[in-house]
Length: 343
Image 1: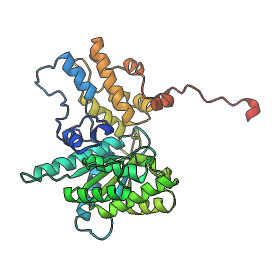
Image 2 (image 1 turned 30 degrees about the vertical axis):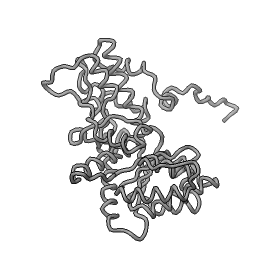
Image 3 (image 1 turned 60 degrees about the vertical axis):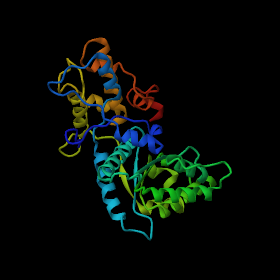
């Protein structure tokens, strides 16, 4: 379910940090943090602290599925000029790796283009845009403009910004558009409806494959009404949910733990000790990679600072996770026991 041996891991990156082309290009070309190699000279304490702070991200099933489908849809869309190309929607609960999957696929596409590009090719293969809170057609258009550094003034109308965006994106050769936080779009409001219509118009005017990601998109307003039906009718769905403890004969969550453990740089950690804690870790994180990875990273840093150089359940249990994970594992308001009169 994970493939840490065949694909270089990538570091976690803030979505907000890559919303311009220059920043995204730096992210795509940055050398990923390298796990310790056999025979390698031991790194210093500061180097190991920095390494575990950035750490690695393995290719999850969601990343594998998204990469495969994006590649297929981009091939399908190369010669489609009449209507909007088929698109993808990545959905799932919070902290399940949607943004990581989006950025990893975008990075792969960017690097593949760079390897094939002729000298002097200044085309832009990938655009990454965050839907702003309370998005309107104009603010959303402004985010697309900002990614490529298109000048926008307060006096410009939405139509003027749109024309500039469509012209520049087409001229730049953008082939993959990644739109994150799509759940912020609310077509039930007048401004949200205008933003949804603007986005639909953009997909028909820019010859690119569009991929959207958001929290529980199928249950949000994005899929509601006529506008939602138009989006749903053009997009395939990829569910980036929590990893199950078992799927058939596989144990995807245990495999993920093993991949993360293999990347640790601790001198006294016993291989296999974290996968043996898979039932506990699954309960602790509800199977969410966005909770599991920080837990292991923080535990590794604590182990280095304490001098123990290994991760134990006691250490893991002492670390406070995100509120979502903590409420799942240690609810502050336990369920009230039914009294005889309640039955």
